[in-house]
Image (cartoon, rainbow, N blue to C red; front, side):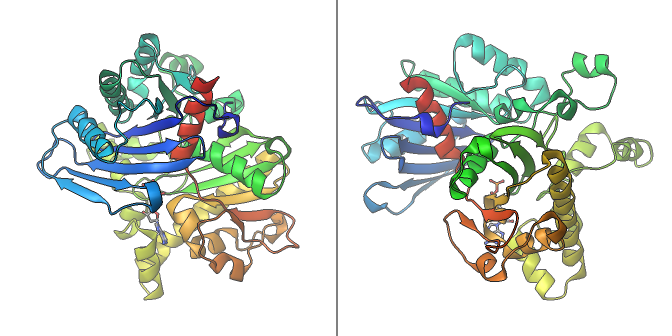
Length: 412
Ligand code: ADP
């Protein structure tokens, strides 16, 4: 697959605007691929409400103070125009000849999109065709693409798919053991998400080990508010914990992760809940928030340290699930070279890393308490020298990965 390594900057325009359009928010970053520097970043949130907010941070020349605008921003078009105005105020407007392309995060690429793809009318139609399997995400991504196209119709726009990295999963890992005709009629299978993060972090881990990606087997634990694990063998994903939707797998901030699917019929039949209510329960009111009322790991640890039993049980359930996946993916890979933690919880929570690896000495996994306690934004090992399997912390950078993949595609 195309990677940031492939992005050799020539003399032409070298800036890439990365857009991540959610249902009520737009995140953006402007990067220069000549030196991978960040020129600006921003967030527009609560689009369509009276309390919309735009926060724009200039990042050139040592950076500047974030600028904030509040008040209703009616829709995605207005949000992107407001972001473009902020960029223009820093001399980085979308009309700049330095802008080479816009890279869009697109959540669901189905089976069709295995690589970053230049967006044509046909590609956009295909992304629309995937709305039934990604009803919460793809519509917002499409709106973001259309709005950006209207602002700069002449500029290449590239879709980078969350699912693409996982399309290398073997069929026996991707298929659910349900009736094949029903599954195929409704495109029900395991797609996986957070793919740009798993791709970036597994590659960076190989770099940290001083080895080529094709020579290492890595278990990546992306633990943010959403969380997923993947098993990456020689640079190719062979298993991942999210499935048809991002609900499957690990315990997350507000999502249950794995449960017996019969829980859903039970809730319908016995509790009289509708499909939509069960959807909200499992996606928004479960996971850490459902178990203890908080989904921020810092707050949960504070409560655990004060002796709060609900918080302690939530923490134990979270860590137990992680351990199960580390064990399962060790078996799937056969030989593991590294287990790597990333995203908000993975990069910052030493107690989660310590507890997830504790007791796994038989698998060659050990964490050094002093190394684990170090606070750093750099990729680092937290296992002792003698350990058979490396344990690492590698900060993820989805924007850089999207910009790199976008630039590599249009620069060729
Ligand atoms: P997402 O991109 O999925 O919204 P992030 O990767 O930014 O999420 O992770 C957010 C989560 O990271 C927070 O909900 C919190 O639980 C956790 N987090 C952030 N900073 C810390 C920290 N210093 N210690 C422990 N957990 C942290």
